[in-house]
Length: 164
Image 1 (cartoon, rainbow, N blue to C red):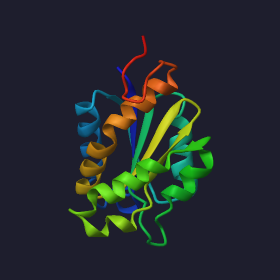
Image 2 (cartoon, rainbow, N blue to C red):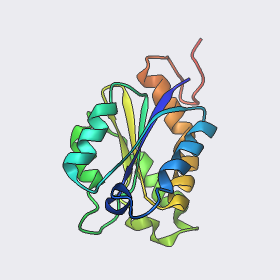
Image 3 (cartoon, helix red, strand yellow):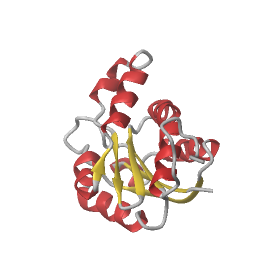
Image 4 (tube, one colour):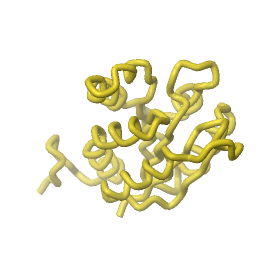
């Protein structure tokens, strides 16, 4: 079973000022997709804290999902923290998360979420709202499973089927 880590990025949640609702929902959605969530952490909206959390997980799990910090507020710095760590970016993830959720949430176009690969680990940056977490994971879940298999060296065709 592929493994995953969930990192919630939030100043208020990291200080205990508000409950983490996005992280537990991400964990629930990942489990429904067939991932075993082995780590969960809450960090403040600080580049060094986000990079440290992602770097600590990168060789220990197949997927890292971050929630929060993808908007346009001055402290929303998740993309700035994660993108430089990536060996390759996967722009289609951000594109489908924004366009796929637009009809339900018109402000989804403000999100700067996306995905990339660090070594053999997929990193997906989700919005912080529980609705955004759920909608986006449902949109990119099948692609996440395909990327994990590809990064593990499993020969796959474009339909996600093993090659014989």
